[in-house]
Image (tube, rainbow, N blue to C red; front, side, top):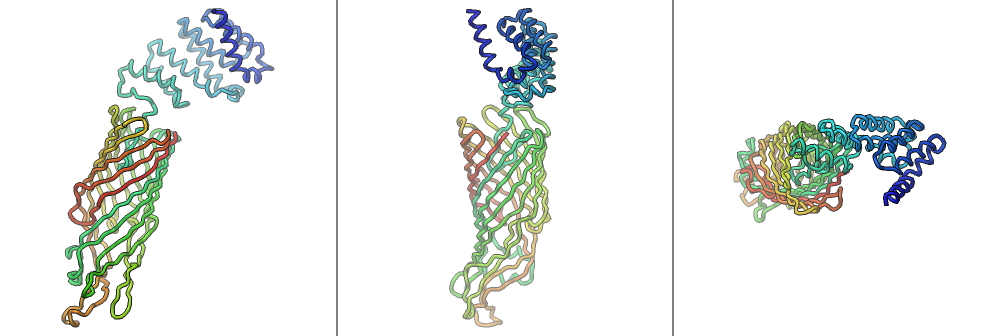
Length: 487
């Protein structure tokens, strides 16, 4: 039986290494014969070691001979000789052009590193062993041998916070608070597209206008409404394991409805709308600290003012004085300035739940949009390997802004101009306008579906619980998106 097993081992090895034998046919034929003799024994004996030594003498670039010799020494308890053999295997695998061009060389490339780590582990030199296994994972992150050995080392060192498979390093992020504490590994790419739809309303009160003509607004209703649809495309890239950059492009569709007043009998509304590119955002994030369960990063979002202020013409025509009159309005699609948004982000894993939080402050010039403080917290629970349930909460504070704006209204003539029933037509007022900020709070449930290993579908809604008392008040936000990640 033992002889049969040896023959099977020899035949399997010959079938596997036949391409190698062809490459080295002219220079290492005799070394190949010695190597086969050693494999035929496969008993960790001194004779088996002798055959590998002879193979190395004939062909010093014979990487497998070094690995097999190191394995024999390891099983014999000759750790120093084993370490020397594995180090030589690694050196030859780096320096030999013939080895790097051989079929299957990539699979053998990290074998001496893992074997060296196992030797250190058997000696109880856990720090040296962990360093070798980490080096192997840098070359091949999918190596299960390196992963399992590293987890064993962490357990032996009581580093339970680090005991988590490497593929969990990229813990999934929330749907609405999209900046986690993790960073992409070196060379990793993430591409995301999502769509959001919501409506927001704002009251108009006399104390918002700083002009002597505000008395003209007394006849106007006090509300305006905007329906917003946004589409976002973003890409992130890992420059190294601790530094991630990204670029996001936004596209907006804004449909505005505001009440001009009354034409003497009926309420008159204007409905201008605009479409176009919003501000682009450039992300840079640095991983300050983190183990496999906890990650802490700092980041900054630079807003690039690509979103212009567009002039929209209402599709409604107002009949005044025997003719139709159009109503136009300036509607911004961006902040109009280079804004900076520094922040910090934390991701923590408590099996099986992922917790994520971040806080950021947006610094603006205060002309179109005001400064903003945002804080978010979320939890992600995996129902199974394919479905995650998410629950997020968020707080936002917006500063007041003061801007120049043209206000449109439709009024009756005052008594000193003519009879009250005579319509005055649409009136344009250039005034300083203060848009109020305030505090708001929301909750956001959602679902994430893993369509494939690298592709994720997201569905969620953001529900306002506390709305700011003045200014723009958001209603429910509907979100749908896909994320593709490749490491």
